[in-house]
Amino acid sequence: MEGKEGKRVNRVKEVLPASQEKMEERGQWGNKLEFVLSVAGSIIGLGNMWRFPYLCYKNGGGAFLIPYLIFLFTCGVPVFFLEVALGQYTSQGGITCWRKISPLFEGLGYGTQVIVTLLNFYYIIVLAWGIFYLYYSFSWDLPWSSCNNTWNTENCVEFQRRNASVAEEVNLNTTSPVMEFWERRALRISSGIDQMGSLNWDMALCLFIAWVMCYFCIWKGVKSTGKVVYFTATFPYLMLVVLLVRGLTLPGAGIGIQFYLYPDLGRLADPQVWMDAGTQIFFSYAICLGSLTALGSYNKYNNNCYRCLDLY
Image (cartoon, rainbow, N blue to C red; front, side):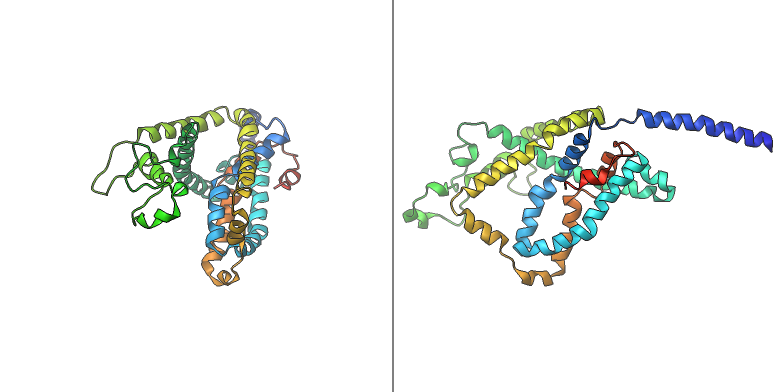
């Protein structure tokens, strides 16, 4: 018996240094600002910039903020803190943290990775669209501002240049240069399902660039990510401020904001509004995806994560 106990003790001693060595190999954020910016970068994604305005307009304007705020404080914030604290406590990623708590919960980690994989498949496409438009935005004359391009059809009409006296000549198939650039140049949509069309090499190149950018952002782990977030987390906020100022200075901006945010309280009786609000919380704060757990795992064990996350 004593021999068996001695062997067990020796095995434990052999395992402990190995585990401690693995913990030491896991990097840490250079400073608290890197962690704050990395979390901010994961939050200010397409879920907030693209999905939230659409749902707000769809579900009663300002009335949508009522269920959104309810789910925010009852579900979003607690789970947000929980995931970050879980990663910081275990110093493990989105899968192994659950294994460390209980192997029975490891499936939760794998489930989140499946969700993230599926989300990346279409989020990366939207990023490729952005790269495509960014390239063409460097043109002196924006290609989506006129109908004098090779992809435009005879139904293309520049509405901002049309005279009201000839508006009656516009047929029902009229399209704008913006729409034709999107459908015929960016997406190159075929005429029907019976025609497959050809490979969109321009968009394929943009998609490849998007994947390469993602790779180099994370290829050295926290060392490269901690430096990249100084740009990726601050530049979108700067651009949002620019777009906000530009939008507020456009003609009819006040009327548009009033129409957009005017609360339709009757929509609160629709269960779909509450479902959309609850779902949007998961997109807005990137919870239940494992990313917050992974980001929190690079903090120091005694870091006050609650103080850092109060900024959000």
